Length: 126
Image (cartoon, rainbow, N blue to C red; front, side, top):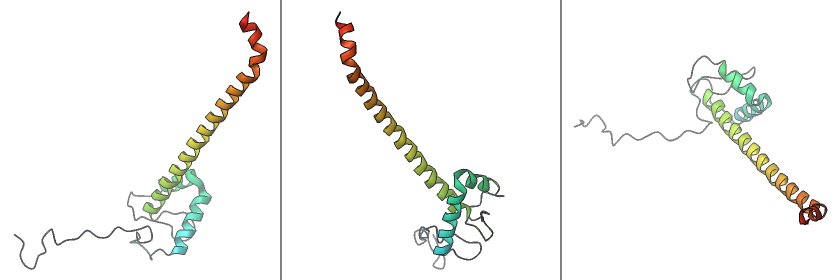
């Protein structure tokens, strides 16, 4: 049984969830301007460029700063979240593009069958 000076496990509360602005434990706290600059730089590098920069990091620590420009970069967690979100967005775009092409192809195939029917019908009926 815990003593009066030690809090019990029930008294300990889980820390609140942190958003991407509060992740940093190394260096100064990120400002909204930092986040905008990071996103702009990451978008400029593209998915493959960001992946290659992330591969150059020396550890898997989520708070490790990733080198993306001259100034201090975002923490690894921010970059990984950006990669995940951007990859998912690209995947959704590619899936949507695929299904649009399937629908257009199907409509074109049906239209060509309808257009060819008057020419082909006499040969079929013989």
